[in-house]
Length: 420
Image 1 (tube, rainbow, N blue to C red):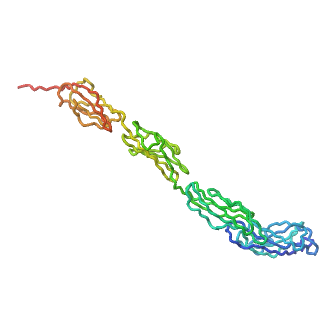
Image 2 (image 1 turned 30 degrees about the vertical axis):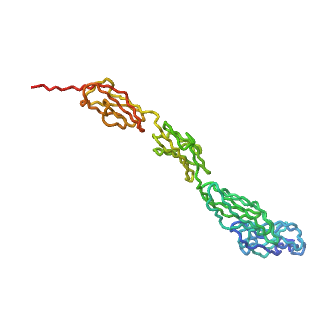
Image 3 (image 1 turned 30 degrees about the horizontal axis):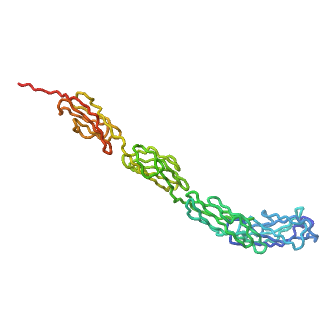
């Protein structure tokens, strides 16, 4: 009951029942308690209560929460409650699994507050549950693929007086909700929520999967590892898409394409006869300046992705010698008179790999394998008179060419001995 004075108004006592039991739920999320009491109807002097404004529902983990700093302010639906009127309020934002003590006071319009009820206690609970409760590991999933796991959301509201639980599930990338969200569950109902892991990089992802209902929120840790075991593809399209190619010129330029379900990071080339390098571009690439050796050259192109997976394509290129070798005597000059030791020199085309000098059709020394092409000729062993010099140039396949002949006059002095 309430008196007409502020002091007497503190003498009222209210009956309080706090409902709530500990249910299986995750250690995270906001818990709830349902508190019920009987509304006061008279003041302490016996007069009817006509100015009830609100209630204060004090709560805390100590056995004497009232009065205290933590309370819910609940407006009264009427200034004059009828007999045996039950007030029920849900306390939200509590720590799930924690024992709370609750006590209630009544407040009139002029601000006077009644005495605290005797406290009641119960354990804060969630009004819904999500199973499984632990960390969900999606395992290793190849990039470009996905894996699904299922969670079950259940309404834990009591069968008597319980209500519908509505909410949504959400997860940041690379996880997503496939089905089951949003959910609306009647008392005792359950619904499956399917979560998908779709990795986009070779890394481990760990995020919070959130289930947010009308009053409560809980979360689960979900984790998964992205792997990339799929190799890229690569193709040579220029100068031909065939596996073989013949040419009479060098260097050669290759071109082609490459692809990967995540991305190509590099394209490289190598020649079985020597030489390697990095192509320009990736999905559309080009490799220029590839020097071919005469004969068969196996050119291999390798595409690589970020995970180190590789793929190769090959072209067998055959370089033929379509230009015959050329060679010419450069010294001595035609018609020159020579004596003693003379240097015989020749010039040759780039495809020449050896020059053999000849005197009157006979080899003059050994073949010279690299420029400058020259040989020393000791003319004292050659009879005086006119002689012909030539040079024979040879390329790698064995083709030869003979220079134009150069005629010279050998004139070594003859020493005569006097008779005594």
